[in-house]
Image (cartoon, rainbow, N blue to C red; front, top):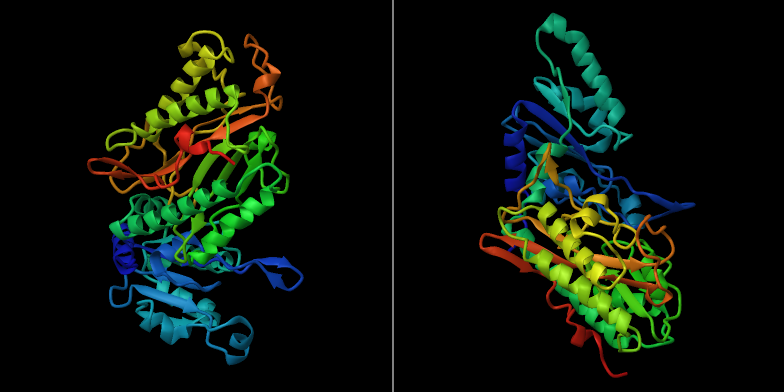
Length: 438
């Protein structure tokens, strides 16, 4: 089921009303000297156009129904293309990407005023696009100056984010198919990684195994800087050094997902013993995190909220930590005071889509957003036992036997009309699957 960008453009144009939107592409980013990072398109621009070249600018013009979608793109240039690869140019922008009109990028300053003339408002994300923003703000200022004489002009500058991100939050069937594929490839890599792990293997070798599978399956590679964290490294939430040898008796936490050619992402975390056997303390905490995750997953259904998912995981974790002697007091009081946050300091999930931490509101004012079919989120409780954060007053000191244990279990979940689908179920997580004979 192919992704179609045209219906999205139509929805966006309808949502704009009388406003005209200017949506720039991402720019190429310098790595060092004259070397650039691999190009990654702006997700909003990609969502509406599918055009994967840097520096382009898209106009959405509901006040010009004869040509509401206009692209400004880099012109074809054989000399540049010898060095950097093929460009689509203006003809390709129309023929392949559905633009009603297309112009060379160097004509943007000249033509932008006439395209935006007659719009009731201008829709543009300020602070993100330094090459386009001065043009747009000058044009808007000129319209404001002329408005008292003409009696018309764009009197407001709006952000496109609320309109566009509300569309992106609810995935189309074709998007769900792409997310299923990203989840499948990511799960396969986790299974391959666990099979190769043993004491003495380096975190970097495990990371390489995962990346190799991502590339072999046709993805772009990692969706985000992966975490391959043995032992106490797993208690560093954004650990990305990934270069330590794995030690006998430690756990290994792997947080890694792939990004497909069209930017849809997987995001999985699994934790398992390096030597194939949990210690008593490791198994106790693993069982607790898994119980919290399963309880939270059961809350993913239409009509519930992401806040309910988080609150459910927290309550299970706090109850279990009290039973293990790592917390003391009433569960309600501990939850209300946040007295568990030295052991569990992050939320239980996030939206997933074209961005790993995808766009979309979690709350509308005082009210949490209700889960609806088409939404996709991660569910990822964890526990991280170390000396990095102080133990809250009134809570028990942490015995050394617990320290250095970091566990997170994360799945990608799609909300469906009748419940939910765990997209990443092919990555095993039962305790029996995490243990093995070396």
